[in-house]
Image 1: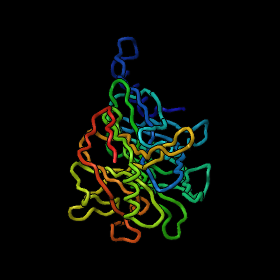
Image 2 (image 1 turned 90 degrees about the vertical axis):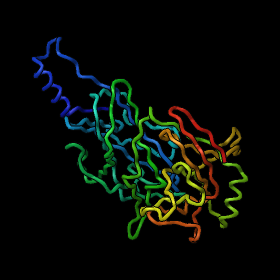
Image 3 (image 1 turned 90 degrees about the horizontal axis):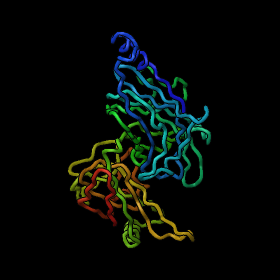
Image 4 (image 1 turned 120 degrees about the horizontal axis):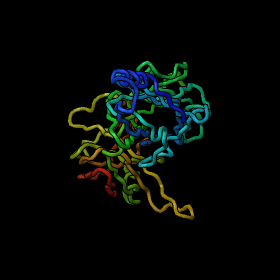
Length: 333
């Protein structure tokens, strides 16, 4: 990995000059270690591969750019390989002046099916391009190529002295949109990514019993199922658990915060021993959980209800799910 310090270096030089030169009496600028990884919540796809180019931090003093490519090639990450607490590192242990920052992540957009770029592989093995519809610079810095998309984290965060580890958590169930109209590529909404400080979060993990899965599938009917656990604010009743949608939830319905795919766990003989889920980066608080076996029917652009055909519904819930910093809360359905 290579990285470049742009305006911050000039700012530091100005501070040294203002202090009367660069002799041994000049106070050092305090720095902290900055690390960034990426992780995923689920999507109804087999692979969601992003070609990462660059990470840029900016503040009032200027910008710092980290080239995250692998020897000049895109750093391709299949987000579905990094669910729950699993993380792929983009930036590791770089010295950054302490202070408040905003961040941009630059990826390669590809409207064409190209396994050397950003792409989605669907459950039927088909390959399609993947883009994000945001672009532009970050404090005057950023990849200028036409095929570059930007994920911008508007909320400021602090880098303090010591180690600072952050994760860009992609909520693909909420923000990954399939081809629409005459477009044959997928789109990643920039708002589907949030930045979390790993020092301020815990985790939720558990399993789904065979009985619960079977009961849900019987209630749903049909033959296609996609199991997921949805995370809701504290004390969200089962009947009030809503879907992901662009529009606001109506009346007493409550929108989910995130979702986690339910994955089969195999033993040494490749036999399924359990069906597990995990939310890897959850801010310490009290939550409710909802389980569904028809997550594939939750279109993030449209309202989806039990009355629709195909229907979307939350089958059962868990309440009083308390998350503590640095700990994993276990809750089974």
